[in-house]
Amino acid sequence: MHGDAGDNNSASDKVLKKPICASVPMVALTVLMLLTAQAADPGFCRAYAEAAVNQVRGALANPACARGIQGTRWSPEHRVHLDWCLTQPIPTAEAERGARTAYLR
Picture 1 (cartoon, rainbow, N blue to C red):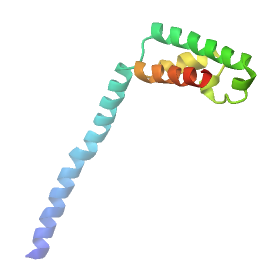
Picture 2: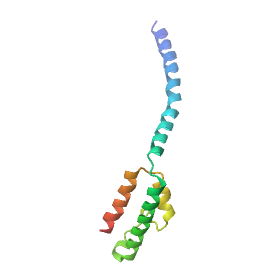
Picture 3: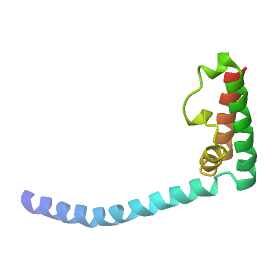
Picture 4: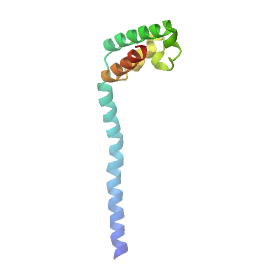
């Protein structure tokens, strides 16, 4: 009898796993859509990228700052900042701008 009960549980486990496995891609797609929906708009990002390049120029003009800048946060390329911003929610882009501002101070 015990073996029979285990078989029934095993069959029901398989039945439950299929809907769960099928729902994982749907959840991932929903999360991706929510993140995309929250991404900053192009107008905001153009201004963000322009400000970022100006901050980079300011850092490069100051030898004390220039020594410590590295990574894409400090890219002199407008497109790098624009493309990144277009994939981020506004608060994340503002935090990144704030991090550059704090470094420059």
